[in-house]
Amino acid sequence: MSSLLGCVAVALAFGTLLAAGADQDVLVPVPEALAKQTPPPRAKAEVDAVLKGADEKAETRPIHVVLVAGKKDHGPGEHDYPAWQKAWAKLLAMADKTKVTTAWEKPSPEDFKSADVMVLFKHTAWPKELNADFDAYFARGGGLVLLHFAVDGAGNHDAVAERIGLCWAGGSKFRHGPVDLAFDAKCDHPIARGFAGTKVHFEDETYWNLKGDPARIQLLATGVEKGEPKPIPLLWNVETGKGRVHVNILGHYNWTFNDALARVLIFRAIAWAAKEPVDRFNAIVAAGTTLR
Image 1 (cartoon, rainbow, N blue to C red):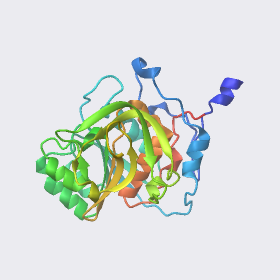
Image 2 (tube, helix red, strand yellow):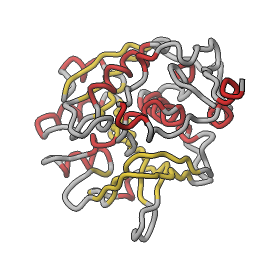
Image 3 (cartoon, rainbow, N blue to C red):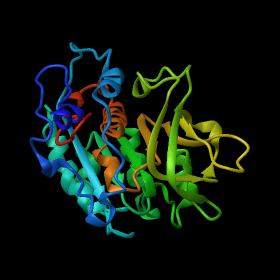
Image 4 (tube, one colour):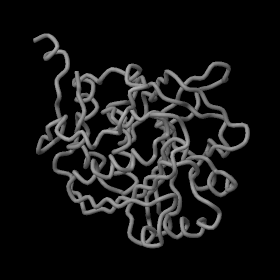
């Protein structure tokens, strides 16, 4: 009985509740080699706290989400872009009024025309030949969310940094391990609702010494690295043309995408970038997961 009470599968939503644990296909698989290192499940109370205040009457519209992935480039359970794309295509498709399609390495010409928001989780942002396509996409109000190593400028650093604020380049640094995502108490952005003034612990990877102008970004959350004179940016927004860009540096390990609080932040970013109410994905926050 104590084990049953200690870990209860739940789903969180305003509206229809989804049974958490009902669909394991929406989890990004964690290989056996890393299973014992997986962080403990989040407490239901802490997830409830950040979802509090959702506008249940907010009107939503049909949107098209494009998930862009690429070839896996790390060890088991790390940078597994294909596994993420497969799981999250199913996960996001569970949400109301949400069309989800996928792309490999780069968006298609049709994606640039029809997407409301693209989510990039892959190694490198985009090559030089797509600069004009992204400019046209932002000019019409398209949204973009970049996760983890998608911030690598890879030969297109100046253009990528100009459009997303900061990008990985020569001299950038990284560290694997504990990350305390810190939100300023005065942060009133809808993505950060319920997080302001808190620190959220993750086991993941940080990047810093990125190329670009920090003064151009709207900073949402930071981290602390030994030897650095000030906190490093980890979550931020940029307005590019009529488009919205959000960057989340986390996402090294597969388990991060199964974390309800990480999902809240990424889902809200996707909705915000699409110019939609940030709570439109609340019903799927805990889908497939287990909460304490």
